[in-house]
Image (cartoon, rainbow, N blue to C red; front, side, top):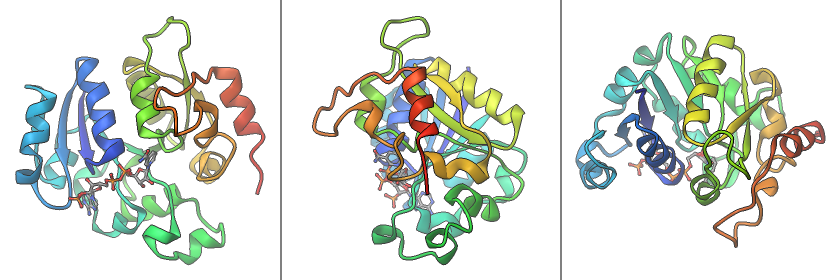
Length: 222
Ligand SMILES: NC(=O)c1ccc[n+]([C@@H]2O[C@H](COP(=O)([O-])OP(=O)(O)OC[C@H]3O[C@@H](n4cnc5c(N)ncnc54)[C@H](OP(=O)(O)O)[C@@H]3O)[C@@H](O)[C@H]2O)c1
């Protein structure tokens, strides 16, 4: 059983938490407003879900998922994330996050920006390219027909292996998309972002296999 710390418990965070619970893991939820606001959510997820502060979720997680708006990066707890395998689900959107010059100019990917705030974490970009409702509905066990794949990007082989194992356990295969500097290939608006899993109007989504995800990554340009 893996303990997954969630920093951010919104649409995508709770979906990852739900899939993790269904796979037999334990989750520690947090948000910006404090654990009291997550007690009911944790209760709905069951006895292996807990509400905590972000610092506690970071400290508790074997894997920690950061799933917040990019504008919140400066408020994340760096110390308890040192040495941890950390998943970055985040996408930059200037309309929500305000303009960030290094991201507007493509000098940095949003994951590289995140790493500046949590420099000692082993960061892996994952889950950022799939609509949360599709993430829930397209999960399938290994070997099942219609299993979908997700791209991951990161600079630590050890962290990528841990994230691959976790993602496999919750219902997806993984395509290694390279390092954090190249993670723009799965960022907002790229071919692998959203489209392979079907339109948002259909909550069930459409399975996207390994070849489709590889082809979409290869088609990315900027
Ligand atoms: N929605 C999707 O389908 C989807 C898919 C892939 C990737 N993403 C990306 O994943 C990230 C999260 O998306 P979302 O849709 O889940 O957002 P969301 O529903 O708005 O939830 C954001 C969460 O982040 C928390 N948060 C904000 N600042 C925080 C801080 N300083 N410390 C701890 N928690 C903080 C919020 O807590 P409070 O409510 O207490 O403020 C909330 O729980 C975004 O970067 C988004 O672009 C979203």
